[in-house]
Image (tube, rainbow, N blue to C red; front, side):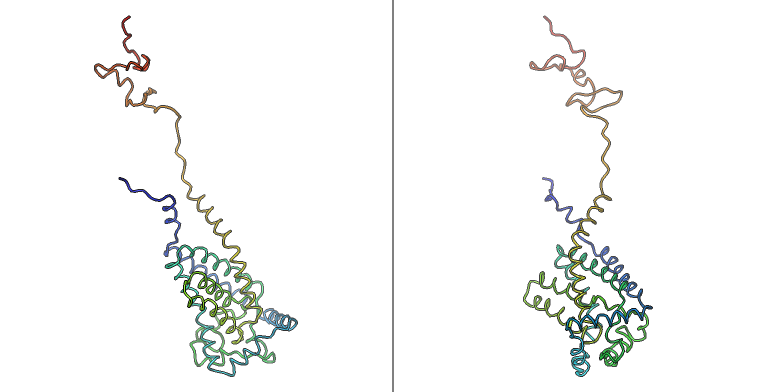
Length: 314
């Protein structure tokens, strides 16, 4: 008995992402992310003005989480050093780890999560480009912030001028503070761990990771509170856009892969050479004439016995 497939199984298998197509896509987006961050490097004065404007807005709203956290991390090395490692490393480790985990263990949810992450990242790049912002650590010392990564640079692999590896600080855009994708990506990881982790530990990590990341980015003076809020807002917009983006991609894919309909010459009986038509069950015209003793059945009209059939005697 021939093997049959459940309807839709073949389509589902074809639509499942493959790692050899996903990896170049992720690398391309990360390359765009890294390149986009460099677009605002030269606009230092505008970035400083934007940073000071954020401080004024926070002051008007009576928000001041950055100063107490930064003083704590500056005074207590046992907090400041791990916080710097957290800021400089986990951003680039946890996010791809969660993405790989989804791909391997939660495949039905992978495509939506990946689309959400990519859409939010591109929105963040727009923010970096249109609103270059000086982080608190690069403001004048009179504003009361200390660069903990410079203070504790002897403990880590980063240099005193940035969170990049030593000697590569000049290759990074240090004025890409708004929005905070550190917080945005951490929130993405947290939501997915909470929803798809399946254990109490993963749910706890889903809450702790984005919360601690928000504290770290402010305590190390790399972001303002409103940067963190904007990072969460960017992820929210990306989450809302993801379904529409997936539908658009599906429509485009269906249009590109639509098969060409075969050309039908006509309807009715099959056509053979010289325009002769065969009746049902015949391979060639007048097939039944060539059979000895072939005759139409009693209930079959004489015309169905073929052309030239003998007329019964009267």
